[in-house]
Image (cartoon, rainbow, N blue to C red; front, side, top):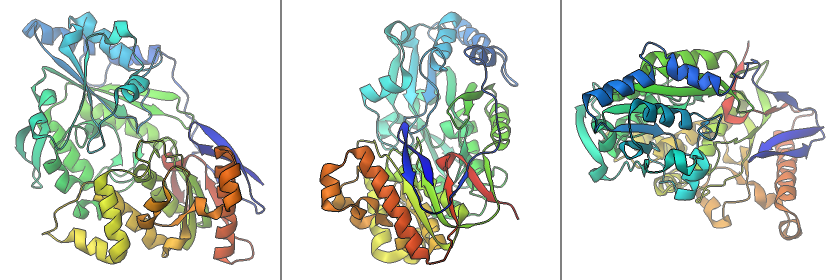
Length: 460
């Protein structure tokens, strides 16, 4: 059987001698007409005046008014670029309202992720010089006190520090993509602010071990989800004048633009994705194959695919992740690496006990390692996870969970095959290894073709 598996911006064709169930999102959302769907959302928002009206009101109050637009970083496939992207229409509306380009600032709301480089920003936003011109673009730096302002504490005890430029702006616009999120229930909306433009102190509870251990901190769960509740409270403290969120289908086509009120526009988008992101399954599987997808630019982000695979695999089953790690650091940030070292040194039980201690000083990005611990608990042995990627240096695998797929290649294959041939061969060898490991006559195998964007759900 030949499988078509997403890899980077394309696909690889992988052979398997056993039958494989190929499962994906079952809904069939229609793509909206573009750019009409974008302009219509800005002009007819949900429970809000139009962006043009709000902009004109701000300029009428002060001709020197400043507008900020928070955007996601390049770990999210938000449709910002070009004629069918949202960014040019947001900026054009602000200019029509009376703002000048220097009065507009775009903030890369990357939370605790690294700063984006100029070429990465250009590739993501794709604006022409005439549209961008003197518009300011800046990276939010969560650990730079000069960028932050203190707002108080949440009802759960978080110290709220927020990007100063954002908080002090006269017009605050937040953009993003709404997709299922394995911690916060759904991305977009309030998450553009928290964790998007908050400081390190605010993340200590939001991304702390207690919140992430909650059963409600899961895909498509908003009610009672402590991350959702905390994020929304912080966002409301910081303020948001206008939300612009999008939804996409499996082919990254825009299925909706939800603009207007921070809460109600986001809720409408979440309701939309509920219609089609679930991947119904009749059983748990011995072997689960999953691509890391667009988001899997490094090992840190590929953890999202691992979590979805864990929902579909049998206890002690096998997970195979196929990833193209294109980030400048294919593993992730220093805090993530430090946390992975602790996991490797102490094991998942002691690691979870350690980070749950009230005296523990949180390490940035330890939350993703906590999620990897959940995956390892499901599959029981690290050897039951095979990570198929080419970009991570050999030495880095010492502390990464699972088996390095590239080690399944012999020396000749490493030297003589093209990258596409290598990743194809690695994946085929990983499947064969998994089949031998499960040691059953007819192993059940599934390919979750939509990667971390489809949410597996076993229907009893």
